[in-house]
Length: 153
Image (spheres, one colour):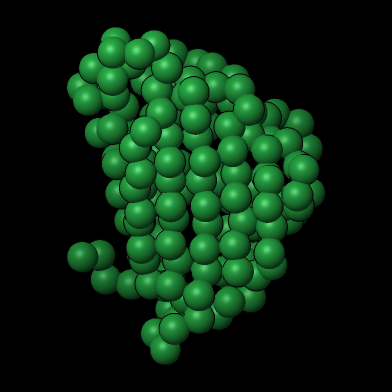
């Protein structure tokens, strides 16, 4: 299983951070366009424990698939966790943490994932999946830097 931790400081308030990141409709704004991300159905403006989010996405080679995540934990405004219930991973556990710091909000994403199919899955992860996951979070960081008028570094 892989573990990644991504940290970004945003010059915004805790309320602004929670409002943006806990609204599932904003996920499409921070997902690379080539993934063709689209939420299926109507959702409330804020996540809650037990909430299921169903979407179509094309994570690799433009091949569309349905992905279902469940919001398993919420402690407003400090963190929430989503876990894949249906999709390409055998494990997908994504923690979203928000902490007030002097510069604004320290946002920490902790991601655990595992690819199915044993050694073949490990090979595909090494060759494709790991890079794609890193690209998604790099894209997200760039979008957030622009959205909150920071210099891109």
